[in-house]
Amino acid sequence: MFWFSGVHYGYNALLPALKELGVFSSFCKGNDCSEQDKMFSYAFIVSVIVQMCLIPLAGFLMDKVGLRINKLVSVSVVSIGLLMFAFTNNNTGPIIFVAMALVSYASLASLICNHQISSQFPRARSIVIALVSGAYDSSTAVFFILAQTYPKISLQTSFVILAVGTLIFGVTMALFFLTQYSEDMIYCDKRSRDDELEILEADEEITTEIEKDAPSSEGERQNIDAHITQILEKKYPDLKSCFRSWPFFLVAFWFALGLLRFSYFFSQLSKQLEVAFAGQRNIVDNLLRISSAVSMCGFLVAPLSGLIMELSKRAYQKHMKRQLANRSLYPVNENEMYWTHLRAMAPATTVMATAALILSSVLFVHQQQSVFYVAFVCHMFLRSLLFSTTATMVIIAFPVRNYGMVYGVANFIAGVVSTIQYGMLELPVAAGNAVCVVVSVLMFIPPLFLFFKKK
Image 1 (cartoon, rainbow, N blue to C red):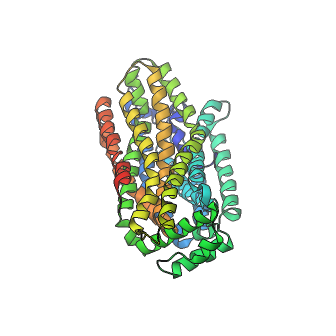
Image 2: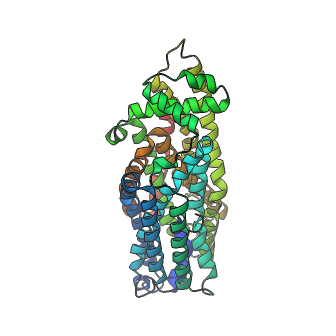
């Protein structure tokens, strides 16, 4: 997963090598290559928009055709995109738009397949999702490594090797580690399966058999999980009911704003650095390399992101345990229990919004390299939390059978919102940063809603 997933997010590290190959060099006018830089930015924005707008297709394939088929299709498309990178030069510059679009879309399609691995670890689902997302984030290191080994190893050779490796790894994972359908990935022992079926058949009652046989913390966890499953099945009998719910609005809202803040930083970084360090090309190139290097650390941040979500989940589970324990005296309100279950996402989304706000605020400072170090770290936290919180929210808020389509449509909405970047690129850098501050403040709305929503 580290080597063969979100490699396209290391795109900025490749820019010096691509410029040396003459990609989009025809847009330079003497020493002024601002139009060339804009073309590279457009290629990245196109990749983000295509990725998000087409991902519902991957969700449909996963839910209706099968998890394994979706994985095989996605790794094949990633390999084709990487091969296109191998043949990008001064004569074939526009092909980079297609290459970035294919790699970005298919890598995310592959990621949502990998997220299903978390179903094998119900006690640490948030941490597993964060680790998988962290591996996806950290794969930006691949483009950084390719840039560092160039020109000793040509980009063509490197990308051919990467394309072949992606295909081999992806096919192996699809055939031997994933099941045909996502529901089949759910792990539970025979007793917990039987308990859950009895609960669903009993409509609103928790079976006495669980109470007798599961007094331990493990039994209590199964009791809560089974009750939540019952609530989800009742609240969301079909796909349409998922899309018409508050949880879907919240996850689509924070993901759209978070993705805009996250991707705009990438697409505008080169210009941002050139404005902050006017006439200091060495510093600009060095900070671009440092940005890619910091991005590698996403896998190290992932356990922290997962831990925040897991600790929050366990804290709110204690409250739900008390509700179930006292249900003979005080009837359990299912809506209240459902929102208590979702409130576990509030701390992580608050940290994410805080990272976005700090990132947006510090970029107004010029001629201070340390400010950009802070920005790179905040961007890394934002990215780690953005994808892991979104995936976790969709998994815990809706029936697992609808995961692919719900996650896909949330991504589609985010992709449409991301088109705003085309207009933002035409603004002065300071004005674009001001828009990002507003976006970052709005990102606090979902966690506040989760903290205060009761029923």
